[in-house]
Length: 146
Image 1 (spheres, one colour):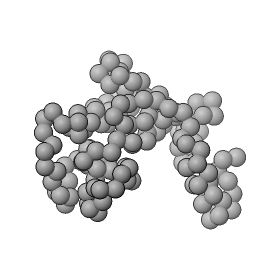
Image 2 (cartoon, rainbow, N blue to C red):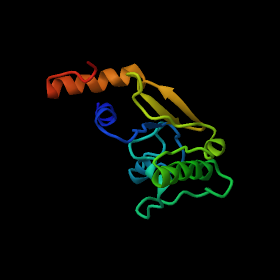
Image 3 (spheres, rainbow, N blue to C red):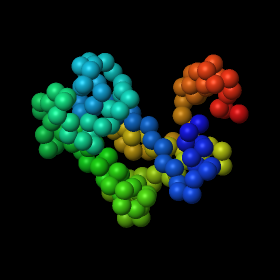
Image 4 (tube, rainbow, N blue to C red):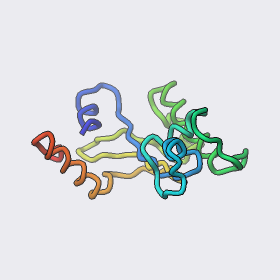
């Protein structure tokens, strides 16, 4: 709902992502000692964007580890966005292998799936949308799907 409203009211493009990369630098899982649980937690990408001293160090993350390669991709996306307003400006697309398009074109939500590879997808999995819409309806009295 918030991305749809931002896209409709704002003048700048809105870029949406889903972090699906479940690596050893995930922030929240390390902070809460949940590293043995599969999946990506909310805010796990922060462990790839920042070095955070309050979380345990990860042994064995070296220059050739997949975690550092993933960190470099995220840092490039975020740096590009800060510098140009576009996470994959012309020229950077070849390095990243994807063009991250803005969300909410023609009523559909495009988003970047940030996993082992980067790929554009459309409309998040419906069971998640139904879950969040149910909460929205219960507490706000209206559906955000309509």
